[in-house]
Image (cartoon, rainbow, N blue to C red; front, side, top):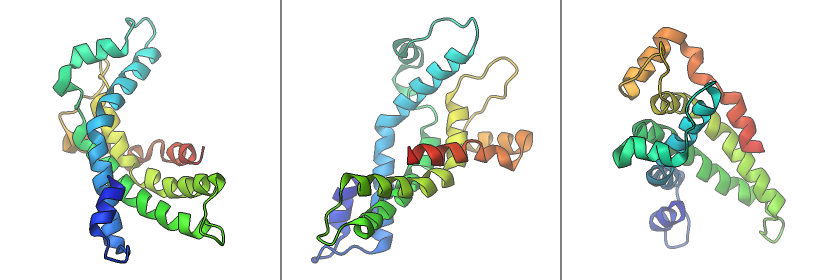
Length: 181
């Protein structure tokens, strides 16, 4: 999707303004939510089930059956809030870094592509951590005594009131390191 939108927004010479690169990246991030949100919910539910001692055996299929088609998109707004800006940052940064890391003939070796991707991913992942925290809280099943959330704004307000501003940045360092690995 990124490349498709970049092509549409490029001039006849193939040049693209920076704002159009951000738009193309954002479109790519938005379109992926359709596919990644259900996977995120299943992943999170399986991770949490594994942490609970004595919990019933949970499988991906049981999560899908429990939630149904529309339930698989729980937290999709927060997923958009994370993935659109992530991709709007990542794709332009990656495109520019690839050019910088290319050899004299304009060729990128696999190592240079890996480094470009890692460097582009670090700020993108770090800056969207608050949206990722909100998304995860919306998608996980609250245990007895835990706070429940009705939506993105409700989650943001409750996280801030109950845990403070720093709670939105839980995992930011880990996410940045993950992008490098």
